Image (cartoon, rainbow, N blue to C red; front, side, top):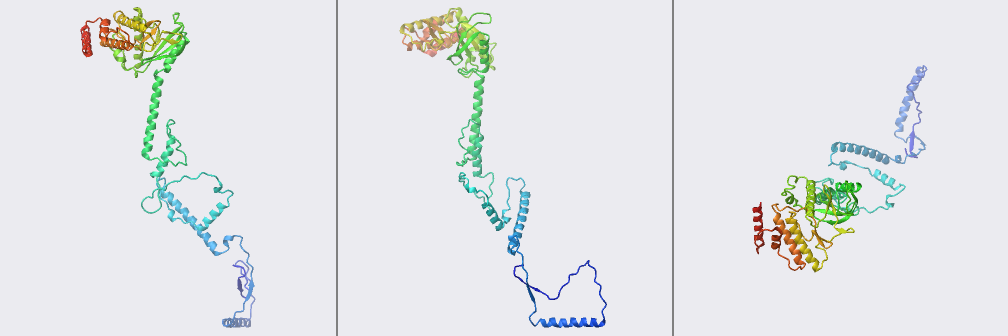
Length: 491
C-alpha cells in the first residue's frame, strides 16, 4: 500500500468474533422490541436505496505506510524480476542435470546453451560485483595473449564444436609434446607462449621416430664402446686386468698410449717383477688387443687355416679369437727371437694383454721406417737389413710376415726391427706365398720411392726369399698363377 492512499471505512462498527470464545447470553425481548427491530431494518434498507442516488457519506482517514527496508520490493516490477530470475536459475540447473546425464563421460559432448536463459539483472549484478572488488584484473601486468587463429567451423547449424581432431588444437599439442622428447633432441624453445608453434601430425610423427632412432643408436654406440677396446679407451675388464698387474707389482705404472693400430693399442709402462721374481726391463710396451673385430675383419683367414690354432678357433666368441690372436703373436715373436731377428722380447701374456720389451728410450718410441729421417747410406743399410731379415724369417723361422710394410718396421740404434707379427703364418699355409709376394711388393715400392739404388723387383725378391724355381714374367697375374701352382705342388 502506497503512502497517502485513501481508505474508506464504514460507520458501523464491526465486532470481532472468536470461535473459541464464550457465547454471550441473549436477554429475552418483547414482541414490541421485535417489531421495532424489523421496522429499523426496513428503514435502514430504504435509506441504503436512497444512498444509491446521492453522494455517499464517507469518512476519510490517512493511514501512514512504513517503507520497506528491502529496495527490491519497492514495486511490483522488481518482485516480478526476482521471481523470474529464480525461475531461470531453476531452469538452468535442470538443464545442467539433463546435459550431464546425456553426455556422460563422452569426449564429444552436446551443449544445451540454446535453451538456457540468464536474466539481465543477474548480469548487471555480476558486473557490478566485479567492479567493486578490491583489485582489478586489468591492473596486473600480464603478457599479451598469443594471437590465435579461429578454429574452422564445422558444417551444419548450431554452436561450433571443437574436438581433439581439430588441426589447430592438434598442432599446439604436438608442439608441447616436443618437450617430452629425449634430452639429447634439440627441440628449441617450443614451450614459449609467444611463439604459438603448431606442428602437423606428419611432422610430429617424423620427429618422434627420428628422436627414438637417435636415442637407440647413441645407446648402442655407448654400450659398444663400453664393452670393446676402441682407440685409446679400455673396457672395464681390460682396465681391471691392468690394475691387477700394477697391484701385484708386475708393472710399476702404466703410462700413456704410444701407438694405435687396426688390431691393438700399445701403452708405455714401467716394469717391475714377475711372480717368479724375475726382474722386468725398466721400460715395457703393453700391447692391448682390441676386443672388437670391426676394424680388422680378416682375422679369420689368418687363424682358421693355421694348423697351430685351427682346433681352438671359435668364431662365435670374439674375445676368444682375440686371445688366440695375442697368443699367436707371442709364439711368432719367440720363434723370431730364437733365430736372432730384431724384434720385441715377450715378457708376459695375460689373455689379450701382451707385455713386451720397449723399442725406444725415455718413453719415446722408436720411429717407424715410414717416418724415420734417414740419410742415403742409412736407407741403403735398412734395405739390405730388411732383405736379409725376410730371408731369415722365411728360411729359418719358417714364418711369413703377411703384413710387412714401412709401418711395421722400426728404426732403432741403426737397425731395422720387425713388429706386429700376430698375422704371420707358416709357409704351409694355403695363402702363405701370396702373402709373401705382397710383402715383397710393399718393401720394393717403399725403397724405390726413397730413391735407394739397386732395388730388385718384387718377383726377384720373392724368388730370393722363397728359393722357389719360378721363371720371371712381365705379367704379374701370370707370375701369381705360377706361385699358386707351386703351392699346389707343395701341398
